[in-house]
Length: 265
Ligand SMILES: [Fe+2]
Image (cartoon, rainbow, N blue to C red):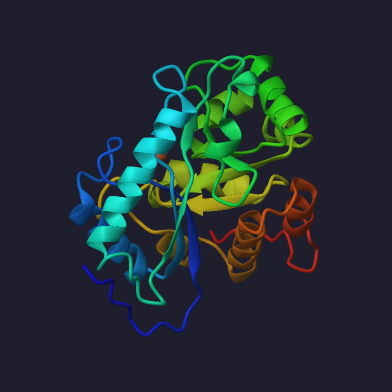
């Protein structure tokens, strides 16, 4: 399948969270399905998709995961006219959605699960109550391993974060928040997302797409965010892909010229 592109004049987006690679998890079922998902992303002006299949550290090693991911990527590229993507089709980068486990900062091979070419890792935090160990592990990952966390769909952890002292608890950590584009569609989740975007921890967007019917970053950003917020998210996203260190990413997020302005009502 050859990815077709539309004439596009508006902004492009970077999708930090997708289950687009075929046959690895509860996302795409096969290469043809993946190609349709990619077409969908292209239609919605996604410039880069980051493939983040689930990685469950207690079920497989990083090496086993990477081998499977490589095979899945090969099969997708073969489906896409033997790897010849048209120029404006989304760029594909690989990463993982790594589930949190205790002592994750000592887990071997995590560096290889970071988004390709970067030291940034998409980390899915636990859904039950949090203890201080989580903050300690995120800190150790950065300091001892040089791995910086992007907290996957952080809006799902709003209540845990509240119990741990609010967003401020993350201020001293070298991390970034990822919000699911689809969460903006529901009023209560949208309020949570907007509270993260108005905060001091840098944010990026992801579709978390498992199929073709999931909202893209473009749809949510343009409907619910103002121009400055969209610009900030894009700049922070680009910096992460250029492997900027957390202090630069944070500086961009807090740039007063870009403005920390309130979200659309
Ligand atoms: Fe996911």
